[in-house]
Image 1 (tube, rainbow over the protein chains, first blue to last red):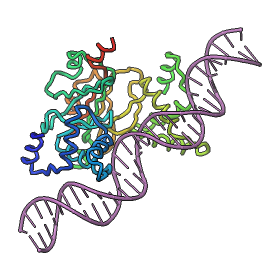
Image 2 (image 1 turned 180 degrees about the vertical axis):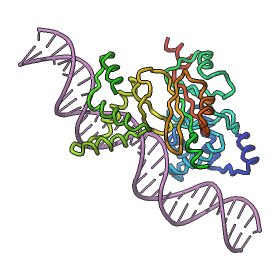
Image 3 (image 1 turned 90 degrees about the vertical axis):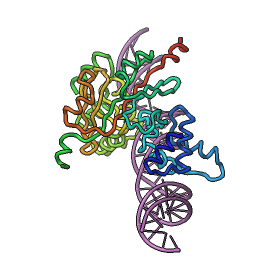
Image 4 (image 1 turned 180 degrees about the horizontal axis):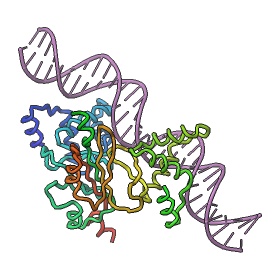
Length: 141
Length: 141
DNA sequence: AACCATTTTGTTATATTATAACGTAACTGA
DNA sequence: TCAGTTACGTTATAATATAACAAAATGGTT
């Protein structure tokens, strides 16, 4: 959290109280949470003013854009980043039993080797790289 | 398609007409399609009997379980597999401009190297490995 | 063929996830 | 303080996905 604060100060960004609330919920969870789980938690903590989905999604969008959290695509869920701001390509080992997620760095050994080292039994992998293909770069250029 | 037919014969699976229809739509598309796009296409081709979502999702589930198609998690979309049945871990380069998807094999050079070779400008990567962690394996006995 | 068990399909309703659109409030810098 | 911008709040609705149950088709057995 203090890292996040510093990072936003450096980048002249507004870590508003809403954004802080959402980040805190994710930091406390250590597990991926759906947007509506976060929403429910916000409303549980403060039942007086009921909050609607867009508020959560906007906070999540901000936190993702700054590399403070990640989206787990295969779960439609969000989790706090272990190395905030490093903007490195995050990689995840997700246990479908206990739902724990391990975030690995790009710099670690190849992911499947690492999984093996950890005694993690892989059964499905999702590898999706998004960007602009060569042809579209030409057209745009 | 003939590959799919053979594969199902070998495995004693029923490539029913619904499943074939859905697979054919995906094969013809060469691009990822959302479940509701597929649904719309089914209903366009045969407007007499209107089809509901579960039918499409079930066909997709079957085709995925047999490695005939893949789900693109970051798009909530589905695409036909280039190497049906190889059950290998598929990897994708997805152009967010033209929406074309390149499927790469596990055996190819490392994905980011390959992206570079193809002149593909990466801007976001999703790497999510699902399985059972060491601890849960122990508990399960 | 007639029967049963199983699998697949069809149907209805509803859950879950996400965003559009627009107005209000708060903050920032001049 | 004022104008411009950014963030928040609210309402409504879009997009994606599944539960639950009924009907039909299929495959194997008698």
